[in-house]
Each structure stands twice: as structure tokens, then as C-alpha cells.
Length: 413
Image (cartoon, rainbow, N blue to C red; front, side, top):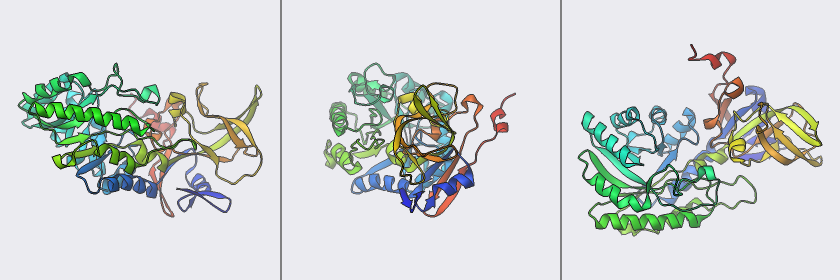
């Protein structure tokens, strides 16, 4: 939660300048109170219904962040064996872990079964066969939902649309009944529900409503054929406000619309899997200006974070607001905010209006960076992974130490 204390920008009650001095830059910073607020929005929207809020931990898998969310009573949406391990280590109850992903390996499936996770979101007939086979081998039954690709177009980036025909995700809408009848014959499979995740950074609530209507029609058809579905899993995908002009549906309005698609007297239970909307606006990236440069008539601020630290602008042409951490009243000029990586695509912000007085050695804050920032970071250009800090009121805690050069050689022979 950002605010100015006199001339200094703060997260909760901690000055960002003090964070820069204490931990160095670049550094990821998270607001614990914002995380709690975001989860509470989902919890309150479901308070009178049976349901589960599972944090999509691919958005941010830091152990301390996961631990904080687990303590709130959340479940976890995982997409790999490694994420299962992280979530168990962080204290998530196995009975609240839902496992999605199109490429679950036999080793990952066995690991999940042996740890008694809640449910698999199955994405192909072949995957179902493998889960059944492994379940038989170790003497357990696997609870499953089918992820159904309901084939709708969305107004979002092509890379994060998961519900169009021709993507790798889920079982096609028209094959849904076939999938459930096939699963019904499996001795080691317990059919629990239906799952759909249409994409990410969705700002139009009508897309979710259309998805709900199509899910309901599948449920009706499947249950007419003797297969009862207890859980309706709507996935995640709710967008966040990266730009001031964007309008984001309230969580309570979204959930109200989705629940309304079903007759709640039929004892359905609902699962939601928010990731971005749980953590994005709780996280920030604090950077230092290394150089101020004019080239080809353009002004550049070269900062100490690159596309290896925050890949979203390079990968999705994503927008993050960028602000100085000190109040500066000079005129603003069009500026390119770029990193040190040897790629022209290594930028954080293009054509941004930044105070002309921002100079070498000053600090900038990249906002709304809590989702898919640290979790997608890499050591490209042999740049060590950066530190992460969690702020709780007036307390700051290091939750990932800054890597050093020697860490670059870990596991290399």
C-alpha cells in the first residue's frame, strides 16, 4: 500500500529509500496487508457458500509469501511437482491442493498421489489413463475434475488466452461428455467436478459469464448421463489495474455473477484459483538509475533491473507504472526506462513521462509487479537473482537473499 510521508514514498509504514539503503537494489518488495486484503475479498465473497479459494502459486512462489497465504486458510492451485513441494513446505493442507497443467509427468503424478492432494484437473484422455494406472500401482484412488476448453475468445494478450480452439489446454467442449463417460469406467478414478480456466488479465466480466453458462450446460448434460459433479472450479483470470484508465470488476461482483449461473440448492461447491488478483498489486520492484543518456533524440534512464528480473514488458509488452520514490516537482519529459541486458527488447517502460530531474543514483519504483515478476525471473546474462523483502506495517523482513556470483555456478559440473 503506497503513500507519501512528506517527500518520501512508503509501502505501509516503511520508507522505500530505507529499503534501498538496507537491502540494495534492484529488489522486490511486498505489502503483507495488501495480500491479506486481496484474499479477504475472495473469502468474503464466498462466506455464505461452500467453496475454496486456491492461490495460483505460479504467480508468486516465494516460500514466505506462500506461508502467509496458507495461514489465511487458502488452498493452492499448482502446476508442477515443484509447486506441490513448495506448497507443502509452506504449510498448505494437502486436502486444499488442486493440481492443473497439461504435462504432468508420471513422477509428478505419483508424488501428488502419495501426498494425498485434493484433486487433479485432468487435461487429456491420455493423462487420465496415466493417473488411473499409477493410482492402481500404489493402491489409491485419484479424485479428478476435467479441465474443459470452452472455446471462447477474449480481450487479452494472445499468450495468456487458454480457452480458444487450437490451444494446448483442456478437453474440447464438444468432447466433455465423452471424457466423463470414459472416466466413469475407470476403477481408480473418483469423478469430483469440472474445471475451466479461460485465460488471464481479463477485465470484462461478460467473458466469465459466458464461460459459466457453457460450464452449466456441460454439467447438465453430464449429470443427465448419470455422473454427478460436486465441484465447480471456475479457475482464475481476473485482471488487475496496471494502468489508471483500466476498470477492473470487483471480486464480489465477479463471484456473484458466477455463482448465479447455478442453482445453489443443488449442493454444488465452488473453487476459485486467483493468482494475479491476489498478489500483483501487493508487489513492487525498486530500482536504481545507473545512467542517464540521450541517444537519437531520445532520453534513456538505464536502471539496475533488466528483463531477467521482470520479463513481462519484453514478453507481453506489458505496462507497469513507474514513479520516483521522492516527490519531484520538475517538468516531466518522455523517457525510456531500460535495463542493462544486451537485448533491444530489454525495457521496463517506453515513452513514459518522468520528471526531468530524475538522475543517476536516484530510485524508481515499478508498481503492480507482485505477479509473474520474481517467479519468472532468470539468471540471463549471468545476472544473479535479486533479493525479496516483505513489509508488515513498520517491519521489513528479507524473504529471499540476494544471490552472488558464486551462486551462478551451483549444480554446474
